[in-house]
Length: 281
Image 1: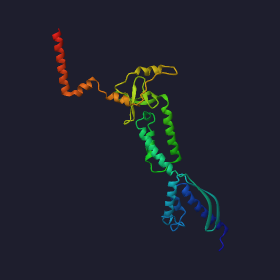
Image 2: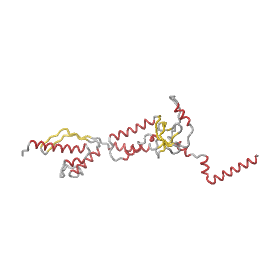
Image 3: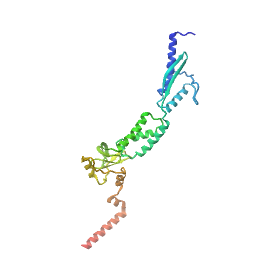
Image 4: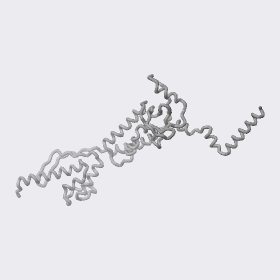
């Protein structure tokens, strides 16, 4: 059977475009592309284990390949054609991140737990969300995800060794929230110009504790100093000591803790003291 050259050329182009579209469905991670070139009765020969017949079966294969190789790409190098047949020499490439992702996901979860109480979260509030998202994801990470994870680790390492002044929101003793210049000493301590600060992990904010430790004058001296070395108080417990100071009761707290019995004892002590003074006089 003789086919006019124009019609033959059109047929060959159409068949080649169909094959190229099938491969593009892998590279573009779009299984629905096959619906534009495959007939409903088309079958993949031979079928892969568990593969359903027809276009729906190849869609499943495309999804499986993309899940295992998120950056999969197919490059067609050569084609050989005759009417009704197309031979292809192609190269498929991709990165299998399955095992690496398992390690990254576990590491991201562990680090998020370790950084939960870090005062650096006040300056970098988005990092815990990013780590938790990576740890809880069931999809394979992209190269950008891995780069972002690595940069987050490097950012924490660098910030932990810096002493710097930054503008951060601070909650005062009256509950008012305002942007203030904050002096941050690594991941250990933070100060305003006049007070020690405490990081509240639940609220994700820096607070001015009502009870301040001694040594506030050193903060002002440090900020005014132009020397290469200066003294500055640092909390090696990363806020634990400052939090315990807030729970330490003062005299009035102890009186209230005594309740009725403690009040009666104090009254009797006062009466006894007055009687002793009266007898001395």
